[in-house]
Image (tube, rainbow, N blue to C red):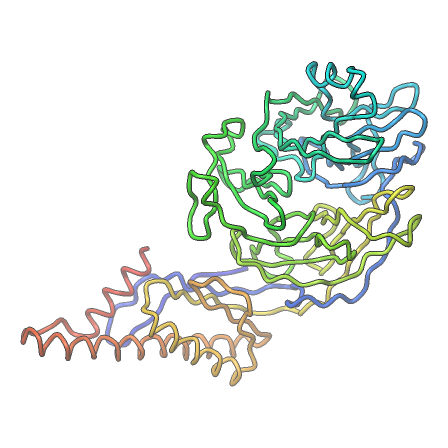
Length: 465
């Protein structure tokens, strides 16, 4: 629950203000504290052959939940470079069925070779090669049962195990309502969206927020961010790239938002507080570390922490990789999150439940700082730290640069702190304006509007945006 209240300046009317107060039932502590991790087991289909595979990135799409997989070892039937499984019940996250399997046990890929690629592989000099399409970023749904997936295209030589990255392609995904339950169809957009040497946007993480699709992708050790209108995903010229301050039209101006992470997902969640952005993934150092990050803005900056070392089942020796969260699988308001990671062959995708330490019912207030000078903000920040200590409150470590966020168990303590902080803002602003009065009077010799009148004008302007 939350509410909006207004500032009150003595001797003035009370204008509307974006000061917000509210109450949370539970939220996990930040920085994160893991209480326990419980292995649930491999993701597999009841009654189906266990096929070793990796990735295991899930997406809610249409009326189903899907796991998107990478190389799937279909025993004697060969390797399918990208497959999908449909979750049978939301409460049974590890039970997921392959939808399309032929009589030989081969699982049909979601993204398949086109005619040109088939001809390429038929040449004698390419008999040891195969083409792989790996969908690390998940499916973004544009309308019910219609979406897009960005995939990395590789040419792999099975003889020398070399991988040649070609780039990132795009495919339209539809949910087939006439065939088997949960069956998906794909249609590749000709060519590539991003080539090797460019940020591989869309192939790290993707999400829809409002009218925009946001895409993250790697170039070397850096991860970049772009956005595109949700109706224009197939048009490269419509993409905009985050340069550290704003979105621009030139990909060469893009600035990294994260570094040294191999796989992961970014999503919005109330796990650690209302409407925050979370990143869960793994590093590029093959260290099996489960990483979690938090930000108030999807552009960052990110506060990132390692929380657990992933362990294997069938392959207890090698490192774990392809670490992904599955926010649909659990009620995160009680501090739980389902995470998966991958064993190497002969293993597969392992699911685990992570329980975080939580804080009980807390009261919070967001105090806006937009429109105030740097001096006023610095004075207010210093005063807020002192006020929080006096009232036993927490000043959120990670906060929007345009607001202060405080929280505590005692509602009266939060109210006292809000009053003390806004008084501090008023005093600091008065001191600043009084200094301007003296300077202006000396320079012009003309009377000025009263402090109360000018402060009221400033607050009304601030409140109205």
